[in-house]
Length: 130
Image (cartoon, rainbow, N blue to C red):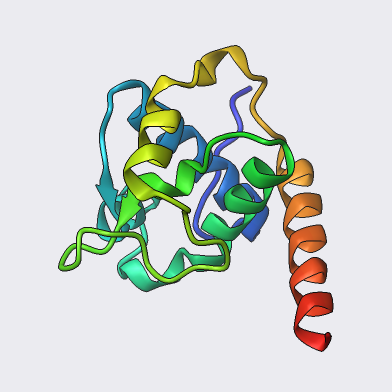
């Protein structure tokens, strides 16, 4: 029987949903706003995606993949919000995202995304202490 996810599921499950949306955007060379992504998940506000996107950002970084999160932008500015990892060159990073054959990569599980997020956040905390 099919299992359904909802807003009430954990951040890691929501991150998994966002990952699937973003790889579909990548294959279609699309950029989406935070509001667009929030709408797909059934959220009312666009300001609730930082942690879900953080899971994906760290997973991509740790697996040496282009930053999928570069496809999500602020509606007014047209650029990603100030995140934990800023793309080095936004246009070049987006092109790398668009060219990557995402459907040849096994999608991360919710648990894998959670591990990547925890590891990434721990690394940031260590950097701040130095």
